[in-house]
Length: 125
Image (cartoon, rainbow, N blue to C red; front, side, top):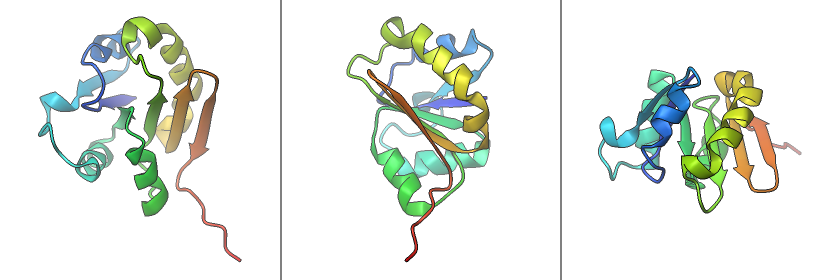
């Protein structure tokens, strides 16, 4: 799995992911710091990356565009530093890696983890 770390998360995540066998890159090293979320999503989709972010707008983009990829890992925890979440998050990613490779939104907060398969379906009447 290849993980693209959004600007709102620490670059310290790169070695955490890489020591567990995943390729990781921080957006700061490949794109403009103030790039739009849709630009980041397009880059991730074109290059086969999963987006790792604290930004809730990425989930909204998935919901409004009905795309199958890229997958998004959305962290909803205040202290999202690797020293606080690293071991715990790695276990969660290992558990859901196949879904993330196929297209999913993984939301992680302090009390639970939710995964939704992409593309999101609309309810038709």
